[in-house]
Amino acid sequence: MSKVMLITGAGRGIGAATARLAAQRGYAVAVNYRSDDASAKGVVADIEAAGGRAITVRADVADEADILAMFETVDRELGRLDVLVNNAGVVDQVSRVEDMDFARIDRMMRINVTGPFICAREAIKRMAKRHGGQGGAIVNVGSAASHLGGADEYVDYAASKGAIDTMTEGLAKEVAGDGIRVNTVRPGVVRTTIHASGGNPEKTDVADAVIPMGRVGEPEEIAEGVLWLAGAGFTTGALVDIDGGV
Ligand code: NAP
Image (tube, rainbow, N blue to C red; front, side):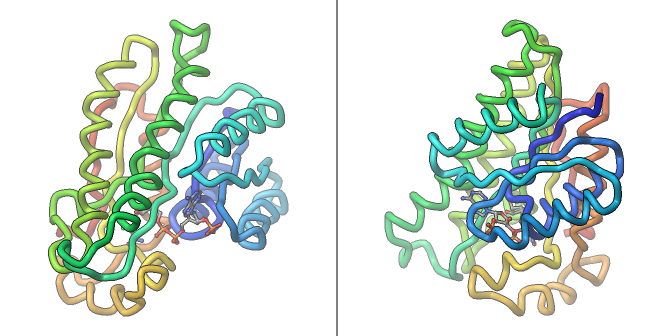
């Protein structure tokens, strides 16, 4: 039986690269997305064409009912969950904090913090030995922004990723005895569409100059870290920087 991996926000970018690599490594993959059906279906078609197994699952991670339905779909169609990858996340327009309204910060925290917590909760209910499960792994996609701070750009986003770092430290300890490992990759700037969606499409060009290694990362390089943490038997509570040295 294949191990089962649910990846939130896997229709594009880092999540899509992780889905493709996971399928190559033998996982049956649930590809979650919010609205871009065509991209998510494209990821599943690529996986199936290569002989792998995958399904699409539409759900907004800012909506609890959607999350519950997503996990039920994975239970029904792929079976017992082994790995949750909390990858879905957003940035917003470049802004100073004094110009941010309540709705922006609330949306940021719902998608980047509350969503991963509720997904982790549902994964733990299925994987924890105390609930009759067989253990598993949670891998979060954080960000180098959590230690850089995002000044003059997106302090709200950086703070949301800081919450993911802290969740990793605490939850790893809380569920270690249940056979669940919790780890986080912290990418630096990666070549995906997230920057254009935040109104900052030139970020990957500008970033080359300030990254010690002189280039931005590729989604496949982050996917390698996620897959390593998914299977790294003695690693938990780790924050793994994949960022070109920032
Ligand atoms: P991306 O290219 O913008 O792709 C985002 C994916 O997440 C899409 O599949 C999107 O679905 C999905 N998504 C967005 N909001 C969602 C929601 N509310 N519910 C469910 N799915 C949602 O992003 P990315 O650059 O790959 O980023 C992935 C993760 O890496 C994020 O957590 C981000 O913060 C983190 N990260 C990225 C970078 C970077 O430079 N790219 C750096 C550090 C950390 P649709 O396709 O349906 O819109």
